[in-house]
Every structure is written in structure tokens, then in C-alpha cells.
Image 1 (cartoon, rainbow over the protein chains, first blue to last red):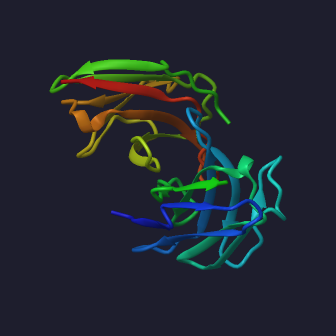
Image 2: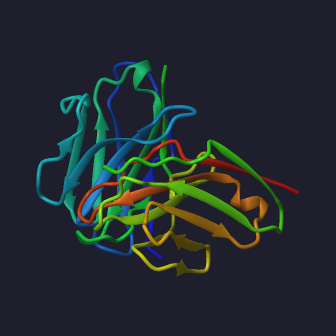
Length: 116
Length: 109
């Protein structure tokens, strides 16, 4: 089946640090990639959608200058949390989809980010 | 996006069938019905999807009402590993998945 690899699985860093999270589709080409955030005991919230070679589309309330998304190839997207603060601590999950039809989205295992 | 209604939680005994309901009365004619599940501390996992006909795969079965306003995910024999939050998501081709609250399934040994 389709596999999405996300790295790192967890990271702890000091306030003010920038953190990069990688998302790779291992056995398919991802036309579109998605980034979600999930706070404890809540559902997933979509942050942004990106297509290869294009600028990401951010959901309302998500700061594009704080959450930098790069989708440079059909198999790799990165999310950089710039100048992270404790309120950015969350579970970040990437997802990828092949094609633009009704195919399923495939998800990474998530990155647990803790900002001290 | 079509609104969905799912029970907050359900319990099942191990090795018994589980029927997880979902109401999606505002679904459009072209929306597929997708089901995902999320195990603790993991990303969501695709389970099954369908449009009008009932669907079966190795993980589960999906029964879709004739008017498409509701569907039921069927796990034929629940195992402890099936304990997860199950999300029912009407999905229009080309769009992104929008997650609601889902149903937390607890499986008792």
C-alpha cells in the first residue's frame, strides 16, 4: 500500500528555534500534500494544502510566515515552524494524495513537537 | 462540506462484530464516503470508501444507505488493535479531507 514517511517523529527544542519536518511519499508520486495539526483530545485541523512546484494554500488563521511549506518535488514536502514558541507545541501530521480524483489520502505517523 | 454526525464513543467485545454509524444527510451527489481511523499517537489510516454500492476490503465493509444520507462501517471481528477513533468523511474529488469528532471505539478483551 501507499506509504508516507514523516520525520522526525518527535522533537523537543527551545523557544525561538526553527524546526523542519519532512514528509515523503515512498512508493507513489504525490500530486498534493497536506499538513494538519492536532492538539490533545481534539480532531485534526487542516493547516495548508500544497501542490508540487506551487505556493501552498493556507487555511484561515494559519500564519504563512510562521509555517513555511515547501513542496519541491512529487515525493517531498517540508514544513518549517519558524521561531517556535510553546503555543506551537502540537502533533503535526502530513498527508499525501496521488492524483486529483477521489483517491484516499495517505498519512504519515506524525511529529510530536514540544517547545520549551 | 457535508456535515456528519457520529456517536462520540462506542464499546465492543473482542471477536464480535462492530457497526459504526454515520449520518451525512447533507451529502452531495458526487461526494464519496471515506472512512479513516486513528490509533493513539499515530496519523490517520485509510479504511475504506464508497459512493453508492456497499464495499468490502480486507479491513472492513461499508454499507451505504440507498438515499446516501447515512452509512455504516462494519468491522466483522473486532480485535484489541481496532481500538481507535473512526472518522466518517464525505469527500468531493479534488478537495481535502476535513475531520470531525469521530467515534472512539473501545474494544474489551
